[in-house]
Image (cartoon, rainbow, N blue to C red):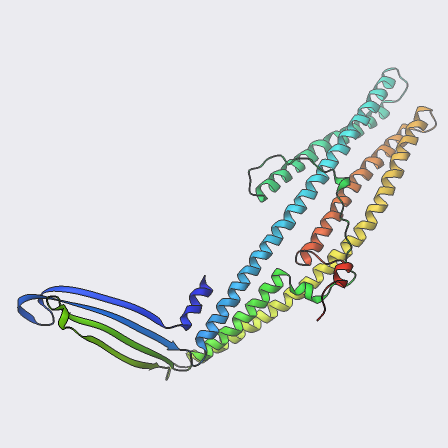
Length: 381
């Protein structure tokens, strides 16, 4: 809107004015009342001899494009945050399932140890150890339920609604990203990031404002014209057209260097815009590299965590069998339970971190990337 307003400043301006009056005073005292009317059309046009209006137009256009880039940056941030919260929610729900399953297992173990303690088969320390492990799993459940509920509320509000439950449609294990990540990211991709585009347009706007400040040091030239009629109300037919045309020139002569200082200020602001642009670009490359490292390392960690869960679960089963046969102590069995519980929770956390790293890469690349096949099919000039 501001760009459209500034754009019309390059065109001539046409204004109309009319008035009608009746009385005994019209510049001097009359003995009889009379009336008169006047209708005028005035045209004014400032000639953009020094380019001031064109520079203002360029600045307004650049600021409009910067606002569009800012809007796209906001959309990208919101979309990324929605995905992040969704993955966090699935992580907490997976953790609730793990904790509840572990509580059920430890309840069974606790009941068995309680019976053996009552019969004097095991010592009280074994009973206490079983109670401790059952309590650890039991209080983990409300911790993850609380985190899941608060995440659901945050996600609902971010989506523009009241806090409500989110449908549990997809378990964490089923959420995967099956895409090919490019080995090298061309700089043109990063230049399309909304924050980079915003910083670019701010430089363009600030450069234009230097031209505006420079033009303010020179005279402004305007052309004016007036065409109209004026006569008494009781004699419409005797009036004639009246017109005049002219030009005006207004320019600074001596203002204590104020306009020169304004030019210098705009140049400093432009230098600041360039420095901000460099910082944004450097940060863009860093975010991409960080995200690529995160994706690669989290993928490796997920594989290792799955092996950990597999081994810990099997060790828990074997320890249970060994304890039932009296081959090992109850402490070993409890330790195997603890390791299996921690391993499953760790896997859920890293799976969520891997999905989040893809979102970070998506955001760092300004909204996605092209696969190698798509890059090969890109048109060449």
